[in-house]
Image 1 (cartoon, one colour):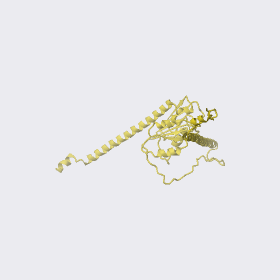
Image 2 (tube, helix red, strand yellow; image 1 turned 135 degrees about the vertical axis):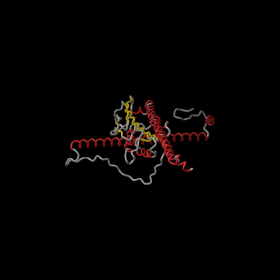
Image 3 (cartoon, helix red, strand yellow; image 1 turned 90 degrees about the vertical axis):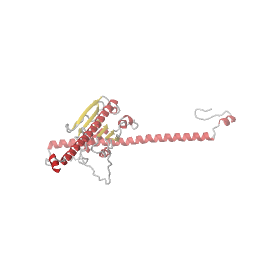
Image 4 (cartoon, helix red, strand yellow; image 1 turned 60 degrees about the vertical axis):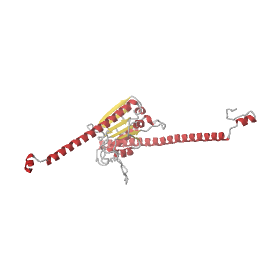
Length: 319
């Protein structure tokens, strides 16, 4: 019989001989125990790695927000100084408000053109390392052919990916939380000579976390800004267009928490509807361009034929 501490007792010698484990059974039990131990170790390592990665991301997110807050403070202080003393006032130090950037030259970098729409989802920062990503932006992206997913810290990668698309293809960016803040950073950087003032057809920002990204630049055709009414500390409020005749901005308030926004069926439906409409507009515009081009070619060919056609008088003289 077996006791609670796994010690096996036998009645007598014959009972032991009849019930003793064979060598193969012993080896199998040892192998099973070893395998179970390895699985536990692997699972424990995965948990440790997830927690470690999340700690690193948490530090990066904190630095990012502190950097933004510091930049906003400098701009605020600088603005007050300029308003008080005026530019060029004698013996008054005016702070340098220009952003200092490190310039790098990357030689031999090739960009491969991809002739399809740029539909990019940018995930925000989440404290829970075991969160099911399939319920949020990642899950939405899986249901849109050709869509890609990035992290909030990969703004430069998003810009590189946008530049692989020809200008005839639409650009759609969807970001949540710090991912929404990164999306606005991306469109602002694309709105420059360096990037050819690249047009963004649709920008969806979901409860963006930031301090200075409320103004949407003129290279964005439409911004759909979704705001939670429960977590005021997590969002930076309504957005406005820098040029309202070039950019349409819709701010919509939802009665749900910050993390619920990207997982809510109603919100996802509205975002999908915006994406579908943007893609259909791009298709219609493409068809219109092709029809106009075809019509112009026909007119040009007709003019060429008419210019070479003999008049009736010239035709009679030729006979």
